[in-house]
Image (cartoon, rainbow, N blue to C red; front, side, top):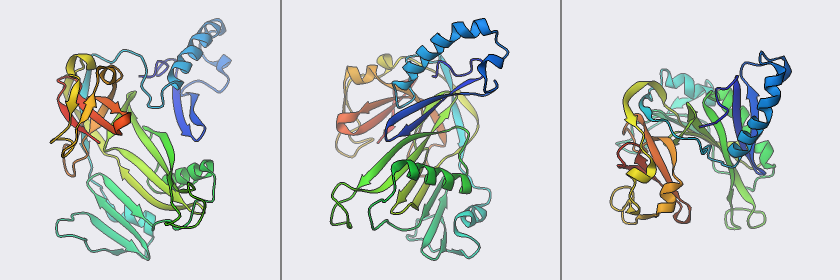
Length: 313
């Protein structure tokens, strides 16, 4: 958790850019001039070096995890993915000329709306806006793409209070996909991560925007459920106590392959709230340990109290 979070109205904000992670301190309750806060100036002088040292520690991790001790207990969070007015939501993207669309398969339960060459799909806690695949390389810098994506989200679904800009990456194109030099970004993907009570949310919770060509928004994908209450409490045990190093995931998370989880990976696990990916599955956020195996491009999620493997990607 952020060591500065909750102290004297100080709030830590992280932003990922092409130059790395930018960490800013914002004041939630103090005026812009820190010397006009209710804290005595002398106390402020003593606190500033400690706050800067804590900030350096925060900036060392892009994921938001810190070396602070995890809480003893965390509640399971109950979720609701229902959309009160899906037509009004679709109209935000498509305008008044939209028409209902037809499902592409008999078991497709999504609501579909169309307008010209744009489509909106809405299901339980999930929204997809699609305006076509980019055909040319991106002609704008990544900073401008971030601004375009942010403005688009703010003008349609709004950026939630618990959302943090997490990553920006370019999808690389080949000469077969269009013009431009090999290695030119085909589009930029801008993603927001969710933070609840200082705990990052992993799994099926995100807002992603694809920006392509001359700054056109090609796609928006949101999986963002409303937290409606708390379930049972989970006694959080250290990852090294509940996760056994070894081969994990074959036949459960993954069809055939498995992920080698070493003792070093277990020791580096971060505490998250995990939301399973299954369509129409578990509508809860579960405290979990996230083990990231970068060499195998895989992540596994273990129950923070029992060590049960909950899922992965």
